[in-house]
Structure formats: structure tokens, C-alpha cells
Image 1 (tube, helix red, strand yellow):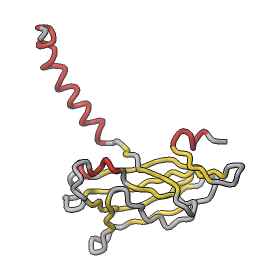
Image 2 (cartoon, one colour; image 1 turned 180 degrees about the vertical axis):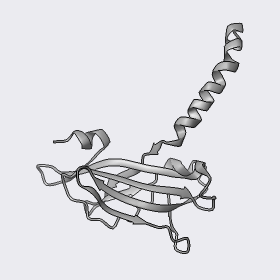
Image 3 (tube, rainbow, N blue to C red; image 1 turned 90 degrees about the vertical axis):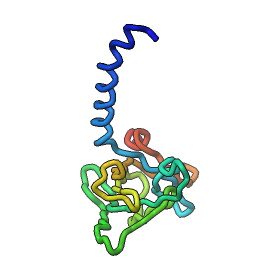
Length: 153
């Protein structure tokens, strides 16, 4: 190994690790969203969240539907520890909201892994994504996500 690299590594490596840990704290995670047959979105935790296929469950603590310049259109908190809301990855979350076409929505929810202490920051995750459902000229519906949804006019 290069001698110069060996001298720099002890200084450089801790800086990278510290920066990575700090940046990780406020990261938003991206949920999966697909349209169902009835034209409504299925919003779920992605498959890769259960990397080792342990069939782990996630405790959903809150769900939000937000529209810019309008505010919250719908929100639901599941703070009652006696009635937790558990889902598995790829399972549609229950958004009790009827999404309309050609409106830019911001969808968000907060989860933690079942069985873990909620104070453990590593298992708490904020999920957010922008979406828009459009009706194409042939009458079919199409889902636009993130930048594509924001830039649609």
C-alpha cells in the first residue's frame, strides 16, 4: 500500500465516518408507490428494507397527505400503544384518502421496526415522496413520481 495513503487514512477515515453518521440522521427514505386497478396508489415500504428476509414488521406511527399551497389534506397518527399499526414491507399502507388526478401530493409516514425500542434512532425512519396521478388522452391513468410529478404541467 502507498505510504502516503497510510499517513492520510487515519485522518481521512474518521472524518468520513463522522460525516456519514451526521448526514444519515436527517435522511428521508423513499417509499414504493404503484397504482392499483382502482386507480389509487399503493404506498409501501420497499422490499429491500427486509434485506435478510426475516419477515420483519414495521410499526407505522403516522401517515400524511400534503398538498403544497394548501396544507395537510389528511393525517392519521397511530400513537396508541395498545393498538399499533404493523405492516410488512411491500404491504399497502392504509391511507384513508381518495386521491384525485392532476394534483401534486406529498406523501409521508413515519415508521420504526417492530420489537425495537422507539428511542433507537437507527430503526426510526421518515418516508416521503411526491406523486401525481394523471389521466392520459386514451383514458388510462399514469403515476408520476418525484421530479417528474413536480415538473408536470
